[in-house]
Image 1: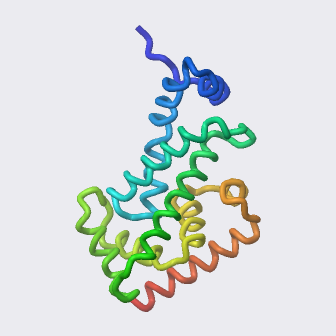
Image 2 (image 1 turned 180 degrees about the vertical axis):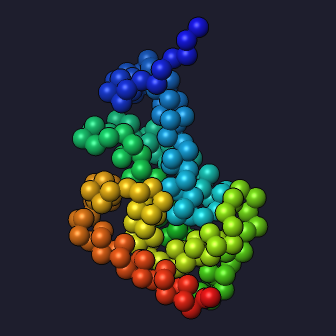
Amino acid sequence: MKPNPTPSEKDLLTMLRDPDTQRQAFGIVVKQYSEQLYWQIRRIVLNHDDADDVMQNTFLKAWNSLDTFRSDSKLSTWLYRIAINESLDFLRRQKSRPTLSADDDLRGVANTLMADRYFDGNEAEARLQAAIAQLPDVQRTVFNLRYYDDMKYSDISQLLGTSEGALKASYHIAVKKISEYFKQHS
């Protein structure tokens, strides 16, 4: 018996609009996009447990918003947008909590990552993540999408609703800030 091939995006969208096949189709969506979304979220929120929570919220929001998806963008773009917004909302909620000084907080990022059993990087990767964590949310998101996902500026522009010029400037500034971080913390 041959395994069922993954349906095309067009077929998947048709299935998502049909109440009889909607749950099955959404299960395919979750299976197909979970890993990509997890890593995108994880690079923003850093912690595995937080990434799992944000991913769960992402799929919950997607499920509850299926009726509003107009298909004027790809399904993956729509899901990425939800995931990034959920991640940024999570970070805003975290920032409203009292924390230590900024330097202690950034050292804590590296230490927390190294202690996280799901983190498979080395000390250099933990330091890079600490440097990225000090970036403003938009710069961090643009840097992650460009550096880790090798996403084109045109795709990031569609995802974030920002001009390509502004994204290029954000990426350039982010790279400069990361370089400065390494100079100051070496």
